[in-house]
Amino acid sequence: MFGREMRKKILQLETSLRSKEVVIRDNDAEYKVRMKAYADRNTSESKVEVGDTVVLKHENRSKLDPNFKPKQFIVTGFDGSDMVVCADKDGSVKRPNVSFAKKLQSPSAVGTEEPQVRLLEGSNGFEF
Image 1: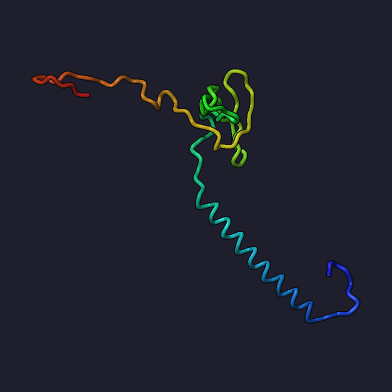
Image 2: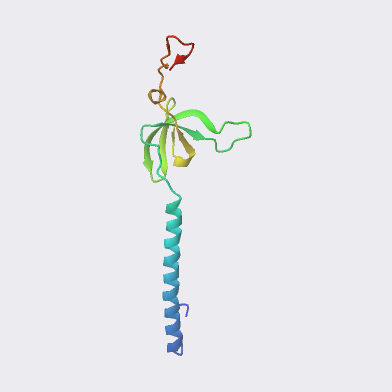
């Protein structure tokens, strides 16, 4: 016991300890599989990719502060669940977790064109 040589060898004690070790290892492996299944069930792929423009959450914010900082960052790479972002103007580099970033839509994706409106003949309505 405890890595020391026993004066009297008890075979029965030795076999019962080894059987308990096997049971403990099996229970531990089963528990780890259940934990992994639970963690995998609640995950989703990130929609942020390299080259996207993001804003980061405020770490310590008060009631009147906005949820996200106004400073925009560009994603330059990933390291697991962390991403490497670089600021537009001053070039500062940060490594926040992906969950602390919000992807901004590019101006081309928003649809900067004005909707076309034409007047319908014979009615007072408009068609878009």
